[in-house]
Image (cartoon, rainbow, N blue to C red; front, side, top):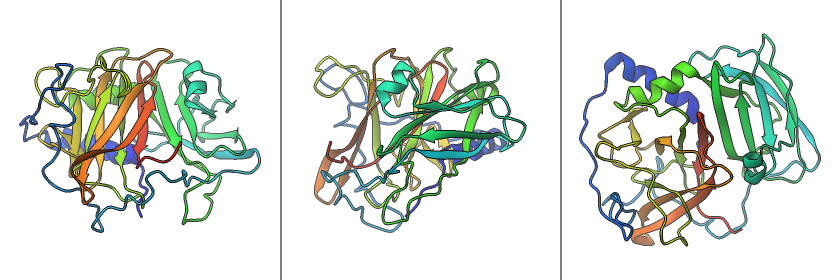
Length: 312
């Protein structure tokens, strides 16, 4: 079972890109869906069955209760805030925790730490009986660091492991890095937009290769929704990874299961819909494996995992 930090991996990949430059700039295949959008989900799946680093994926948890653990009482969480690029301690930033995504959109945190000091240390209280929480790491001056959001984090751990310790270090992304991420991919960053990045997993928390990600401006029930993730052409804003870095030539998730979508326009008071599709043994023609409603805030990066669909 793997549970590596995507943000740290992304940072290493970005600077490897800068050192070696990108190659392999072919575009992905695409299609047209009922709304006239290119890159239709159904027409833009790998011909390969998805695999994990240890073999066949496990989707036995689909429809089951979310296995994320909870703290049975209000619990202090503490750690160090570090710079995305350099891993040094960051002074003068805040960490906020939210019980729900709605609370995050409305900016009504359960608790917010004091500004970090020279050691980068933060401390806040997490609510009881909440399986997954939302975290915002941010610079109150909005000058040097962009907002970093960690969504749907199983803060108290996931079985079969023991409850996780209450210490958790967090990363925050500088203005320089926020400009660099799109630039090394050959696109410009649109001011005021956000980035979504993450990994796709099976029920054992193993990363999945040959998965396809899509972002829409509304749920599947909305017949007029528009595709936001574009994998080809002049408007391209979505990428997969190869050898630990985002590249233009990758068509689907690699063995690390990573994806990145840039230049997403914020949706004040609303969500975008992230969908994860793929082919596997019981679904050779391709199925929706995971969906997640997430907010996009201005000048922010959202880090979120896509896991199989649990029961609501």
